[in-house]
Image (tube, rainbow, N blue to C red; front, side, top):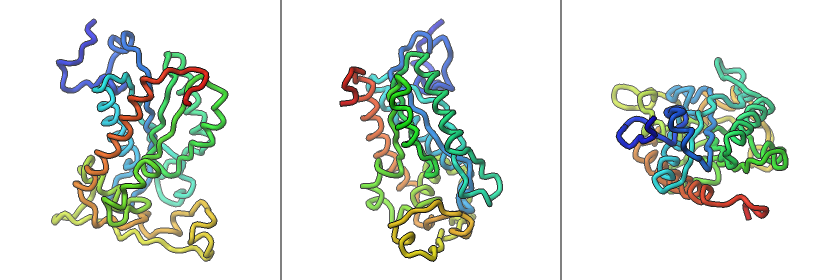
Length: 270
């Protein structure tokens, strides 16, 4: 059976869901990438699958760029559910508790090590998914070396305000720009192209320390927002989304190339 996909414009050998056993059995992958998202409302204009669509778009492009530089990376199918306890009042916010997500990650990691893949990047696109405690728990439990990238935090923090007027927290300018650029068919707009969502204003709590970020809480989203959005989406454009994507892909793919070429020795990752 041929394992040459060069003649196919559709099948991408870095996407596990698109390839067959005839290819996989003869390809030694070095790194797995697991995109994680959520299924939840995003104001009135973005789809419930926004976080998952973003994770898929970013991961697939980063893996492609790394593959083209010789890194044998494989993108696993995205996990479309996340922790939604703070959005429980909204219909069809599909919740997985953190402990449940932890079990899923553990099981998938075992499948990877059984397949000879001992490096994993979790590419997370949902703020409610907190994976760092899990990585700490698993540090001495598995031979798989695990890395975490919350792309909307550290990876892009230094450029967000260069691209966006105000990135926003949830369904704001940044997420809406990515939607317009990469899954515009699901973004609701009026005939003249105006985004249908509200301005994403949020209510302050009664506590100054919480409002100033000195003390944190898990915010009940139905009390925080009017239409589930946090951040003004109206300045969003597809061009801004593409600018951000270029930066995300460049940074992640560089890391994947380095990770694929790095030997696991007693001092890894140092």
